Image 1 (cartoon, rainbow, N blue to C red):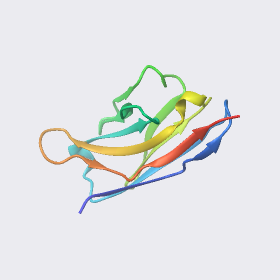
Image 2 (cartoon, rainbow, N blue to C red):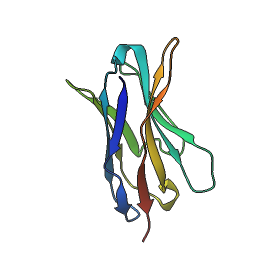
Image 3 (cartoon, rainbow, N blue to C red):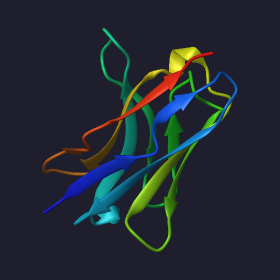
Length: 117
């Protein structure tokens, strides 16, 4: 059974850093594109970053140069390092496993990040 569990959210001030982690169980990383998404209040969920098995990454324009997605090797955890946080980064962050070919997409339960002075 596949499970994704996020951790590491919290309250930060503008300019601070936070590191989110997604612990996975049952995921074969070569079959999935791993990602982080976020949903701000009264907004749609949006892509933040993705990571493929070969190391290919993709970032939303709003976070390029500030956020880094990575995988802890060995193990089933992948992270989102968030630097130079801005108030507009405030959202619930979700990790995601999307199949490269066919199958179900899996989501974590979300972790809240609040950036405020």
